[in-house]
Length: 267
Image 1 (tube, rainbow, N blue to C red):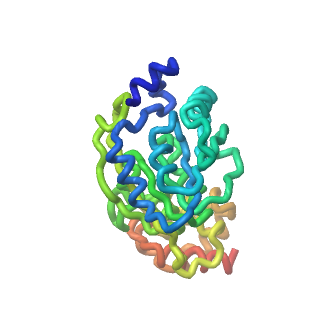
Image 2: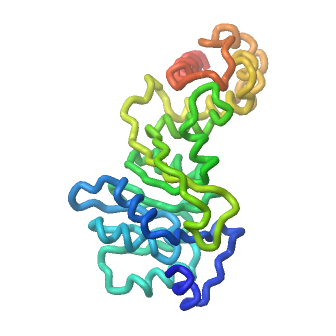
Image 3: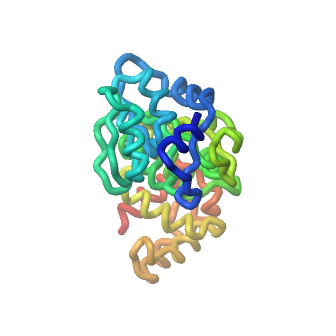
């Protein structure tokens, strides 16, 4: 099906641009099913490609906003889905356009944009079902102390409760990617661990996780340039930090929030 569409429109997928098209209708249907449709809902799709997932989403939703950066793909989308008022194609870079108002997100986005997309979706606070690189998916559901526990884990958990749903084999795509994939479901998080300033928290996390294997007190001093404080200020506060003797990689969300709130009051 995918191969036929690609040949029909004279498209040669470019692996360097993450152009791997989902070619398994059962996987697409599973993603749509996991979105838990409740009545008339609008859906955001990022990286719509030639519309194979778009069509499945449109069967269940009131409106699909299909975002695609590649101009040729947009032309294919418009041709394949012409006459459908429930699908609106949007030509643009997801990191540069203003998103329309939507209820949920179902997407197989470009893998190299996964971090930016998770953060962008997180700020909207909408339930999302995403196809991601398996390695990235494992990172966002990692527990403190795990080797995969990282800044992106913390960022994701600030906005969402992430759930790893299932692995997706390489042969579910055309052309086959070099990496494994997985479906992840992101439930909007209401409890933000008592964090008083999200932007400040993200800045502190970015700094600390640059030195994730170090004790918090030492990581804080080494991250002073990112946090934008002097060495003297960092040294003065390092031993007063909550959980200063624990390693950054072992800190759960609540503890990271306590560190952020402490520094917000003193810097």
